[in-house]
Every structure is written in C-alpha cells, then in structure tokens.
Length: 174
Image 1 (cartoon, rainbow, N blue to C red):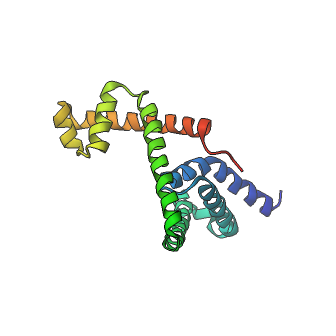
Image 2: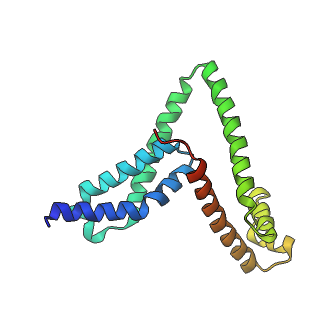
Image 3: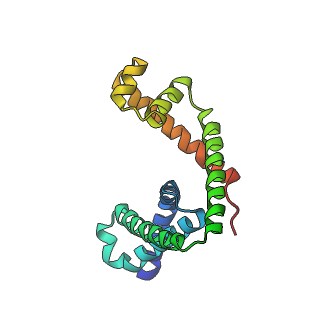
C-alpha cells in the first residue's frame, strides 16, 4: 500500500470516528445543517492536506480548532450578509426564528420526557433558572456531587434523544 493510500485511509478513519461529534458541535453553535456538513468536510480535507506533516503529533483538537475558525468565518460572513437584507427579508427571518424557537421548545420538551423527575428538576434549575451547582444542591437538598451526577446523566440522555430526533425528523438531505 502506498503512503498516499495509507494516509487517505488514516484520515478517513479519523473522519468516521469524529465527524458526527464535530457536526453536532457546530449545530449546537447555531450553524445550519448544510453549512455544518460543509465545514466538517473542509476540516478533514485540510487535515488530509497536512497529514504527512502532522501525522505523528496529531490531536483531534487541531481539527476542532480548524472547525472553530471556519465557524467564526461563517458567522462573520453571515453577519455581513444580514446587514444587507431588506426590511422584508428581516420580517421573514423573524418568522423563521419564531418557528425555530417553537420547534426547539417542542423537541426539547419531547426529549425531557425521557428524564427522571429529579433529572428534570436539576436541568430546569441549572439551565432555565441558571442556578449554580451549589444553589441547585441547596434548593433540592442534595449534595453538589449529586447535582453534578444528575446533570451529567441528564445531558447524556438529552443528547441521545436529540440525536435520535434529529436523525428521525432532521432536515432532508438535498
């Protein structure tokens, strides 16, 4: 097997292992699905171009750093374009934002149903009421370790459910 083929295979393995997590990270930052897919593909293309030089010291953090930079570039471009929109376009954007807000609430509400009552309480206090771990522990009469544990388990369940719902009801691929 040639070095080129070996390098291609190694980068494809990295892509297979990390593309879903990286895409999810971009989606959580508010990057639209098609753009997130494009950024992930661009990241691993950039990694492949430099692979012979970075292979021995490679850390996946390098790829995430590229993704973060691409994300920042996209947001800057998006912001520039948004300032040039007409009033009519901004009204459509407002309607879309309201629709997405409602859709997000429905999806999160559906995902929260999989949590135990205690996990729901902890998530509500920590992320909706924005209480600290200590304040949440005090409010629920739990230890801070228990609050951290409930938060961790709830986040795992929510991510799994949101990924499931995203795969089930996500935007159609074009």
